[in-house]
Length: 226
Ligand code: SF4
Image 1 (tube, rainbow, N blue to C red):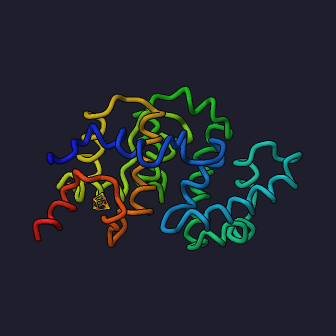
Image 2 (tube, rainbow, N blue to C red):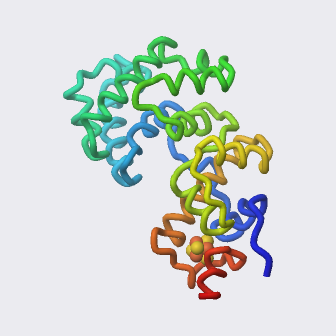
């Protein structure tokens, strides 16, 4: 049997896991925050931190109608306390502070940010301390709904295992997806989500190939040959 092609990955994962919709939960404001909180931790911890934030904001929403503005006016100690469940809370407090300072230059008005083109926004995001390519692109794709494919360690793993593509460069991988898949925000949102779900459920560090429905996988075939 022939190996699967990269342009078939979305359809195959969709067939296995079903529609993911937008996949990253929350409003655009919440996604901006959770994009920082999710660095180096699992989603359950992010959810606990986000619950703390939303609870505290609900109690203060009269004074601060914007969640982002509410967070901006917290002091570091208060912010660190709220985001503690997400781990690395001192580092993340500083990173969140940098992101919020950037948002303040737009008066926390996402419609003002949305007027800018994607390339300019990506550059601005990458200039924020603590915002790397994966975080910047997650914000662009899920909070600002731009057709920018997010690359992460799971994407690299699946490229390696299913397609025998040993690519390391972020841009190289992103360009490949941009070339093969049409520039469609919903498609990129769902495909990234499907990749993460598959890598977490079956294509783990030690893959559970016997339970996997991707038969035309390079790694599986390699195991069968050995
Ligand atoms: S067959 Fe194994 S290596 Fe291939 S995608 Fe499935 S879990 Fe991953």
